[in-house]
Amino acid sequence: MLCINQTNTNPYFNIASEEYLLKNISEDIFMLYVNEPSVIVGKHQNTFAEINYGLAKQKDIKVVRRLSGGGAVYHDLGNLNFTFIKNSKVGKLVDFRGYTKPIIEFLREFGIDASFEGHNSIYANGKKVSGNAEHVFKNRVMHHGTLLFDTNMQLLAELLYVSTNRYVDQAVKSVRANTVNLSELLPSEISLERFREQLIGYMDNEFSNLNKHQLTPKDNEAIYDLMTKKYTTWEWNFGYSPSYSFTREFRIKDNTATLTVDVKKGIIASFTISGGNLSHFEREALATSLKGQQHNEEKIKKHLSKLVISREVQHKIFEMLF
Image (cartoon, rainbow, N blue to C red):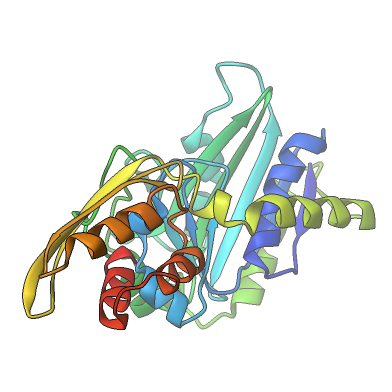
């Protein structure tokens, strides 16, 4: 089994590297990496429904859709991520308990009361410290998970604990849970880097054939290419979301207005607005301009700016759309 102790903290690169290693390397792999502040959403989620989009933009939090399913998670420099990529037989590929077992046993070495809970989580002393997800490709499976070590819990909550009724969709929903940092549970002070080194040492004993491995220049080039063409794109991170709709009620021109929008494959399929003392011309101009456009902040702003309607209306509609 190859052991890749990744030093790159770019979340676009690290999530892209998982897909590359899964589909292009034949050996079994154990990888560790840490990401800069970012929200990683599941493959089948509605990104807008899972995150506080305004806060993510304000704080320059990167948003990345991963290859596996499951719910959204927050990564930062206090969160250690682990990935197993292994060959197996059909019918035995999905194994959440099996892949989390060595992680749980490692945590127990520190005297932490760790256990597998629910469908895909690791709990410690009754609180969640790790969420896990898997993706199968042919005869290979990628299992990856988080380890909350010294994560900014306040920012995690502000980014992920959002209202659940803002969008109507059939997308996978995240399950919220009480979380805790492992650093609070360890019997003595230890740095994330030291914790990471000890995890590698434990895995070295667990898997006798563990071989330290570095990505080659060819690997890095291919990963950057995948990252650029897929993982940094709006089409993947937002446009891939399942169809969704939303209704917003707001005040404009001293009156109440109602906005209803349907989005399919990231494209606004229908847009209607009523009330708000808007003229027939204004309503038609908005609907005609926005229908068929990507539900994309930059592009919507551009289209709104071209309309012969007041700045007040432009700004309010933009605010309601995002």
